[in-house]
Image 1: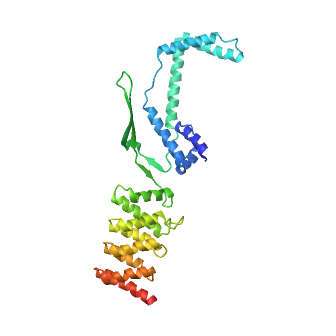
Image 2: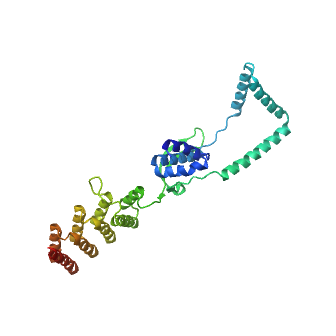
Image 3: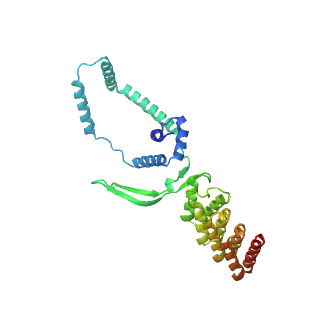
Length: 321
């Protein structure tokens, strides 16, 4: 579905007039097009805003003056055609009903009851269009700011405009670009350490599986950069271990990853992180910078297990040479 068709169908859907066969294509398009989804949300917000506005009834004087002007305009009309005479007879029939109060009341009551039944049936069977991907909970959104205050002159009626912070939920595959982007934001803007740790763990699993972490555009992939940053600066050793696990496939091909692993081996405070870093350097043990760091650690590190593990890797490098 194109965006022009979607824009028209959005308006029909808001009034419950969209045919059933167009509902699913519209839902699919809203799930893929950010601009159309924004238009959908804006129309929903407008309907909510209009629902808050009071209904203004015309004054009796205005109705009476309008009827008088209508009668004068009808009197000044030229001779009518057949169709015009037909409609004129219809209006005269309505005038006859005005002279028969009982019949007019009966017809009015039947029309009111029929319209009420039809309205209730339509309201019960109006097609509901769920949001395909994003689920919002506007009722529980916190008030973010007040954007305007208008008081009706000579009355106590006040209109206050405000904006809400609405939490939203997105569900999708890990291969979806939107999901990956939100996971990246989860490493930076998480509201808790658990959310941050889960974001790093999922990204690390994707990299370890070879998804989404290949180099692109001549530079390091953003996900890989996030894992490197987590390895260097995150305070949680569990998160640093997850980051190391995700970077393991790229130690041999990415110099920035290799430098981050060497830095973790030299300076990380967790023995588990340093031990895993040593095991990750085995495929590149012949590299001169790797051997230099391993020699330093094997001879100077305060942890005997770390010294022994580094020495074993160096021995393996010597056997290969």
